[in-house]
Amino acid sequence: MKSIQEIRQEYIDLINSDIEGNRAGAFALKANMERSPMYFRDRFCSQNVHIPRMYSEEMIEQFKEIVRRTYGIFEKVIKEYLNCADYRELFPFSKDLEELILIPNGYDSVLPIARFDIFYHEDTGRFHFCEINTDGTSGMNEDRLQDEFILDNPAHQEMRRRYRFRTMELFDSWVQKFLDLYKTYEGHVAKPNVAVVDFLDKGTLREFQEFARHFQRAGVDAEVCDIRDLRFENGHLISPTGHVIDAVYRRAVTTDIMEHKDEIGAFIQAIRENACFIAGSLCTQIVHHKYIFHILHLPRTRQFLTQEEQDFIDEHVPRTMPFDDRFISMEEVLKNKDHFILKPDDSYGSSGVHAGVEHTQEEWDAIVREAYGKEFICQDYVPQFATQNIDFAFGDGQWHSYINMAGLFVYNGEFAGVFARTAEGSGIIASHRNERTQATYIVSDF
Image 1 (cartoon, helix red, strand yellow):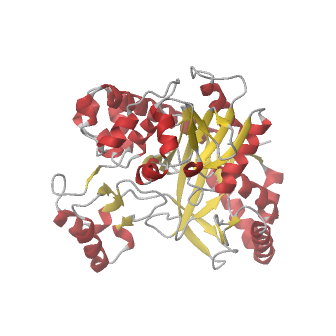
Image 2 (cartoon, rainbow, N blue to C red):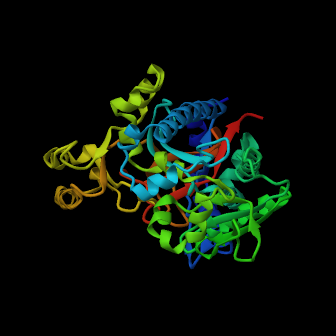
């Protein structure tokens, strides 16, 4: 079989040979997106580029190995936190959050679902981690819909005649993992009522609804609930429709839970009393918080890791530290702007993230001085893998270099698929500014 690089070049050649036909296809695709869940609350929640993300079977095997190693490390870190008070002191969690984290979840997993975002160099197989997402992990519906809409892409249709394109199913596979874990919960029932729970004004509602449909197809009742509308009565968590909730798929991120804990007393009480199965429990915050990369490099963590695991971290986890005078001087970051990236220590959606390469020195000086000594982390900037792509529907219809990110979906320790994101230029991929998503495929010969 040809290399992925050669197959991508075939795409480019096909598009260049019929620019206007592909432009028309892209606008037909956009029109279909406007009539779909991709167009939500009067805006596109996901925009795309013309060439999808493609991986070989060998690349997928590497992703499986990355997930296996990383998940093994994270399991050790979470269990060390739960068991050792001195290790807990290294984390910046409030006492209220620590108390909730330490409540036993009652089932056989400390990390049911996650997405490991990596910068993956397709030409060499080298990679570095960008960040870790746990319970708020999203993108499944975008991946599914991008595969549907790419039917309007004439270059893709020709490529499908030449090669086999296989998608990675992300809904039924999670539902099955969820239900398998539920069976390890002591209070499980034969046919649970499932609630997909979040702050619905912040969450990806259409994705929640799609998961609810797949739970129902698996033979269990499911509903989407705003976490603020739950009730706690007679030892049970109750949905807004009055049903006892046996199992929760938690999509509300821990940051939002703690900021609004006075509004969600029923959910907090359910955690405290272990009143129902909750995937995931708040112990997932241990690896979701952006401090985790700093924690991984500490001598205290290396004490319980194998030499292989330590080498894995040294090679693939960027040097990360709280952005204050205990760990790095302001002057070093000011003088070396292209070497660093600053991130709020517990945000999501790329909010407040600044890479020095994206700013003038004057802009960087202001950003650094404002962030220093506050709740930010400083991280070594990792150069990213870029490929040529073209955006007819949302961009200028010209070829540009796009940086790529691979989000590896992880369902109870196993690789499940990829959420592919890209952005023109260099720096960061920001959901609120420059992000594009791509349909993702495993490509092989027939």
